[in-house]
Each structure stands twice: as structure tokens, then as C-alpha cells.
Length: 442
Image (cartoon, rainbow, N blue to C red):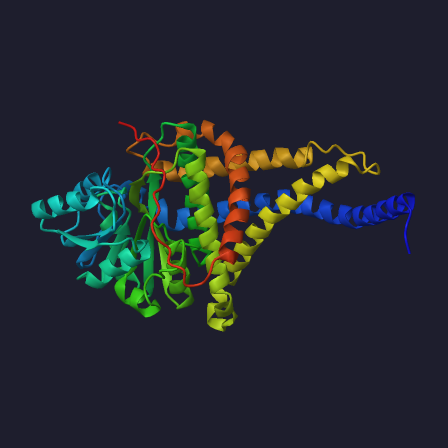
């Protein structure tokens, strides 16, 4: 039966109105979730961070720049996987040699670098007996570099840093103490600090690593489980790594993957804020985008790979963390749906609401106030660890840009990274890529 153009138009209009009638209540709920979820999580992170601060940090602050008292000083192996780090590796190794610890070796793995990284490492190894150099002729990926160094290490305690990182002289001792105090500690994540602060993105990241990264790690440690160690600075018990099969070669973010493998196997991960490590971060939007897409993809890959293992009763400690990660991904996709539906409302004559403001005004004010409180609390806690740069209070002003710059990037990178993780073939090797190191201050 053929329909006239008028009848077809009437039918489509009816179907459209039916869709709008069904979607509008759902969209209102989505809008509420979009704005209440980050508000709720901000107070969850703040509460957990404050608990961690009063349990572990405030009594030690007078000694944070000094060595902790250890019952023993076992030998330590410091592992540095390198790919095209010719501009940074000399400084990294020279700073490492200043570790205030009696027994340590340095193992640097050149993973098929195309620059002069290998030549610099060989030169340094001739000058310093503590440094051993391993050369992989082809690019095998960071996970393989770490695995190679770990198998060649002479120590039970391994400290892994990136080729552009500067490890504070006291960091080794602060991390070692956790392995001595608790035999079930499989890893200790350090406290990365931003080196390059010459641009707006660099200054915002100073606050981000305090207000977001540092606060979340403190809160997660208070609640029991940590989503990931810091890839740039983390220590591991070699026997724990052997128990879980070391790092996976096919995961984009080997740090997130090894964190879940260890905790699902019953090992604990601790956070040591006194283990400072100064790192370079992207200071261009393109570099930041690529970095955050990789992080988002790695997080989703972990959620997909270890889904079945969560059904074991022994994995119950990871349930809340897994659920929070899933909700965060859903939050990003719901924002996308909400934004895509906004033009639909433009043609919906049944609503008189303003479409230019996607949030209730009082909720926006509450979110802004919560954001400032969160930054204030975290910067107060972290200010003690910024003694080399004169504190982080001067970066508080720049944090007003955080929601505008990073929330938009976070939504986009979460969506893109999740889609890439779903489409990726299992077993595909994750190799090194050249990353944005930012603009270094002289």
C-alpha cells in the first residue's frame, strides 16, 4: 500500500513525538547523573584522601625530606626501559646515581631506539660500574623492556622509572620500607611531580596530579585497592611479579595491567607520597590528547580482560573499583548522548527550557564550589612535597581552567579509548611510540 507524502510526513511526525515522549524523562535523569556523579565522587575522593593523610602522612611530614629508619637495607635494582630518550637519559642516570641508599644497581634497557640513546648509555656504563646496559635491536615495547630487565636483575626489590624521570634521592628508602613491613606488598606506587610548568597546560597538570591523581590514589589506598601504580615510578617485589607472569606485552598501559594482575592474585599495592619522581608531561593539546586516549584505552582493556576473574570470591576487593571504572566510562558516553540530543530539543515545541545551559544553575555553582574545595584540600596536602619548586599554592589560580580543558578532553578520550580497546585484537603487541615531552624550563 502506497502512502501519500502528507500521510508519510504525518506518520514520521507521530513516531518522532513518541520518541521524544520516551526520551525526555530519560534525558532528564541522564542530565542529573551527569552533574551529580562527579559531585558525589569528588567528596568520596576528598574523604578518602583526608583519611589517608591523617593515618599516614601528617606525623611524618617533619621527616619527609630525610631517610626513614629501616630494619634492613636489601639490595635494589632500578630498571629504566628507554626508547628515544637521548635528550633525557643522561640526566636521569646521573640523578639516579645520587640515591641515598647503600646498595643498588641500575639496569637500562635500550628498546630499539632510533636516536643516540644507546651510545649515551654505553658511555655512562663505562663511567659507572652500577649501570648495566641491555640492548634490544628492535622495538619490543615497554613491557618487554621491563620484563627483560627484571629477569636480569640481581635484587628482589625492583624500582621502575621512565627514561625522562628524575628520582628523588630519598625515594628508594621510602619505598623499600613497605616491602620490609608487609610481606604481602607486591608493589609500591610513588608520587610523580610535574617538571615542565612553562605553559597553561603544564601549570594545570601540576594541580591535576595533586588534586586528582594524588587525591584518588590516597583515597583508593584508604578504601583498599588501587586502580594503577604510576608507570613513571613504581617499585615491585620480584617474586610477586613472577607469581603473576610479569608485565603483559599486549596491553597498551602495562602499569594498569600489572596493578590488576597483582591485586587479583592477592598482592597489595601501597602508595608512598614521599617517593618523589619528577617527570615531563605533554604541553600541547595534541600530545595531551594522545596520552589520555592511551590511558583510557589501557583502562578499558583491563576491564575487558579481567571481567571473568572478578566472579571469584577472592576478587571481591576489586568489585567496587571495577564498578566505579564502568560508571566513569558510562558517564562519558551519556554526556555524548546528552549533547547529541540537545539539537533535538531545538525542534521540540513542547519544551520551553533553555538549551544553551545544560545544567541547573545551582548545580553548576555547587560543582564549581566543590571543585575549588577539592583543589584546595589536595594542594594543602601535597604542598609539603613541592619544596623544590616553592609549593603548589601559586598554581591554585590556574586550576579554574581544569573543568573546561580537562573534562572535555576526558570525555572525548574516554570514548575514543574505549572504542579502540573493544576493537583491538587480543595478543597484538603494544610497542613504544614517541610522546610529547613538553617544554622544559632551563
